[in-house]
Length: 136
Ligand code: HEC
Figure 1 (cartoon, rainbow, N blue to C red):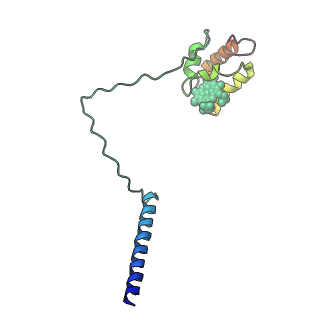
Figure 2 (cartoon, rainbow, N blue to C red):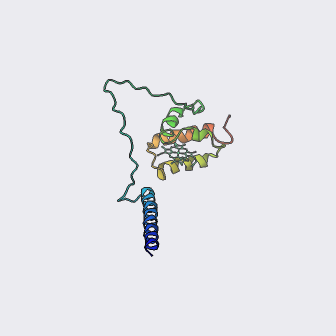
Figure 3 (cartoon, helix red, strand yellow):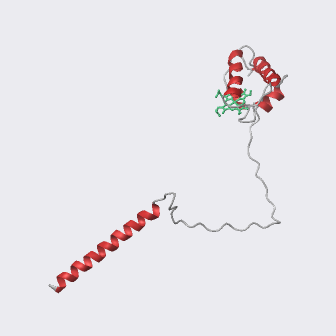
């Protein structure tokens, strides 16, 4: 009778330990806004004040915009958010489509392009990137 009770007590103790371990495991991996988990990160090494840092040179692609009047404006205004390569990677587009494209950049995406420059860009795109005018 006594041994039987001992076994039950031992069994309950083991079960409690296992459940506790399982819950602890679960808590470790459950992140909430209150509990951000317990992954401790190593403190970053202190930077020396007289250190010198260099930037790696990253590959950049030349847009290779066609030469002509309006190229500079196009390069500048159409290259602030994305590469001006967005122009050269389009198929040749009709003039009206380029007009709409410029309007879309201004109205939908907030491109800040003075009216006079927008006209130069439109003219430039017509002269080099329509089905009639595109060279390559
Ligand atoms: C204010 C930021 C901004 C400027 C400036 C800008 N674009 Fe865009 N452009 C975008 C965004 C955003 C997209 C769509 C998201 C993407 O594909 O990266 C886009 C996409 C494009 C596309 C792909 C087709 C499309 O409509 O999605 C072309 C072509 C394009 N732009 C041309 C131009 C030209 C030409 C100019 C200059 C007149 C210009 N962009 C200036 C933000 C800009």
